[in-house]
Picture 1: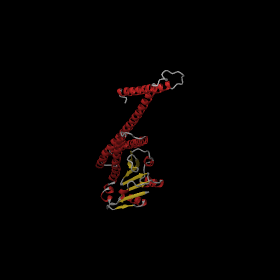
Picture 2: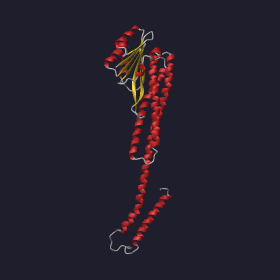
Picture 3: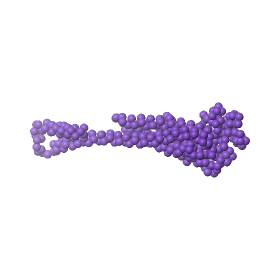
Picture 4: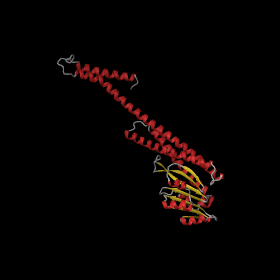
Length: 329
């Protein structure tokens, strides 16, 4: 699917113009155009990269290959930028995903490609927006606006994930957690860690990409326009540091959870071991006097039962006092 926005020399904005008309107007040289492709077909890719903007073979490869990392490549007639947006999956803060976008920037032309059925830039298709912003300021400024919007909306999602991990860190210190609760907590931590690693893998290269856009000389981006990318770069660097913090926080939370689980298990094993230790001498005494000998010393005495029970009680109390003195209880 193709969404189009066209701006003529008089400042009139047209949206939803068919592709053939856009191509004709671009060839007249007095128009600016933005073509937004969502889940493009092979025919649409051929139209965009052969008719609208005859692109280098490597540029076509950059657009079609979904390699998964942000990158930038400059060709004689266009600049190809691959960037990512961070989006939520449901209401779970740890349920984040990244969506790849490809921007092709040419003379008075911007084409964006997203291999997804959803329109991620739908709010930018409003004609009123492009009368004063967007295309009215040029295709480079429109590209920066799209990139800045995608980078900016990720911050709240990442901060929510940080808060979720911190909450999990508080929950794991709760006493008397059931086995099911501990298993659920571990699953939440693993999901958050997987999300953090994915964000770290994406946001680091994306910050490098913005650094190149903001600092390096580009034929299609003048120095005044590079200043806008510098502002977005600062936000991207902050998100990169948040992603690093997320990974460290997830690792620390997991380590703490495992250590606490082992500690709780060792406490249970200590109690069971003490119980078994107390019963060892009791088992010996009762086993000794329970043997079927014809003449067992003391068994004929009327005080034998009292003596055996008293000995067992004394042994038990003595061992408990010993454990207490050693601070094992």
